[in-house]
Image (tube, rainbow, N blue to C red):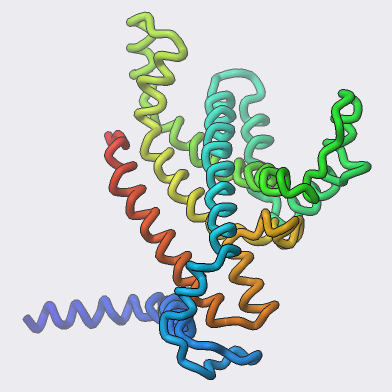
Length: 292
């Protein structure tokens, strides 16, 4: 018994720096946000009136918040499948044994070194309504120009493209690492049996890569929920709130309108949504994952 207690104290001592960091930067902010979500606050963000669950009721009954959640879910639908399909295509393409494969791997993964802010600035130039690259190409093809960032029908899709572009680098590297771990003997046996490229991809690559695909899907869903910088730099939540995703809405309430109670309620709601979505991803998605 004394030995176990001594081991527990030693473990606690070694873990104490990490626990201290978690308490200060993770647990305390979560508890403080949960506490503030029940209050009306002043401009200095101090709680002045206990409002109970009214902040949550107002949030769920707000048409603006419902539009924000619809825009957030649409954004995730654009980002997750688009990023995974392009990253997987490039990873399979660069995995082949051909001259210059390493150069292609460097090219496909270089977006990992580009910041979200830099990509947003680059694409703002591309999306310029008069002189942008994309509209110049449309004009050359005799197609009417598009208000990429100023048309509410196009703005959400427009900010999805640089988000996918910036996400490809990380996902390409992870998927390439997964492809390298697939035993070559499986492909050799399949070739002896006369299986073509598609059958090998469908029956060997995808099942063997499923743990990595599951990992990148979970990470992409969470990061898509948390997207902020590109929205702030490219559209500011507009036009007409079409790109006002939930994290940007929290920022607006907390730091522009000084309504910290409402922002805290949205932050707790977002935390619960991510928690639930991640739980269901593990509950249902992991069943289709093939572990060796």
